[in-house]
Image (tube, rainbow, N blue to C red; front, side, top):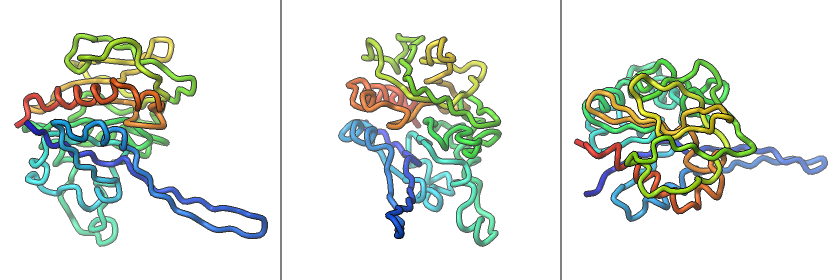
Length: 255
């Protein structure tokens, strides 16, 4: 049975100024950050729709029927403002449905929600992701810190799998490739920590699972791809298995 998954975020635009002696010019580059995930899910039971961050500002559904088209939603490296401030609100001061509250209600009635780490996930760089004390945070199995929550690990860290018998860990044996960072979060009472960083590197949660109402929720506090996942992690044979396991667990009781 095909499960429909909506990935929201994981794109950005970089602007650079180039100086060559007396002269200068500018350039703009568009980037996609979820290509490793798109690749491993292609042809699988999970049919992925990739909604970039700039598209989500206007195109993310405003009504429950739009969310009901999916079995799971992944929010990855996109800040709360992108869903709170569409042009209708930001430019024209009109009211629109609160899409964060819509996500919470969708999960409560049986949807599956995953937040993936990044510079604009959880609370994010300089606290600018702003998911703390939102309706989306209410549904997650973790809570956000009130400030910049990045844990940069330039030396790399190998995940400590604390529940290897959990279905999300099926088929994953041996040491995982290196991680280069996570968002620091706090685990809600009753949530289940499946993997974390080693104790000597803070022991921060890496994969946390929970439920909200009739829905299942998950937090993966590292990235989908570089820079926090090393190239070796993205090329690891367990990479695809990991994401399929997580999505499989989340949608096991899909509506």
